[in-house]
Amino acid sequence: MAYSKTSLPGTKLFNTAEGRGCIITNDVLYDKLKRIYFFGYNDAKDIVEEGFNGKLTNIHNALGLANLKYYDQALEYRREKYIKYKEALSKLEFVSF
Image (cartoon, rainbow, N blue to C red):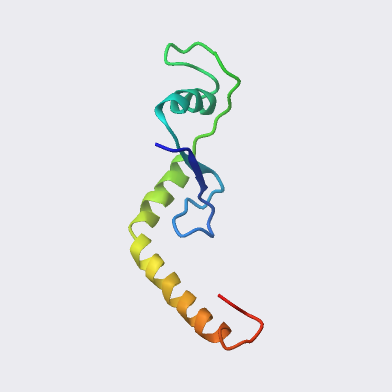
């Protein structure tokens, strides 16, 4: 899988009300990132990397799960707004799409 990252602040379509995000990566990089976000510990609980606590709180995780239920509805609402904005702005000569 290719490396990718995304953030999840409250302004995003899917959010956890927090600016932290997620990373989509390959298996090799996953192990290193897993150690970094867990204080640098490996599976044997030895510190092998510089690390930090990069996990979301339980509350932020719960908000994300609750928001996931409304993803399709929120996406449709944003599509409708996009269409309205595009229709209104396309009448202006100095705006192009």
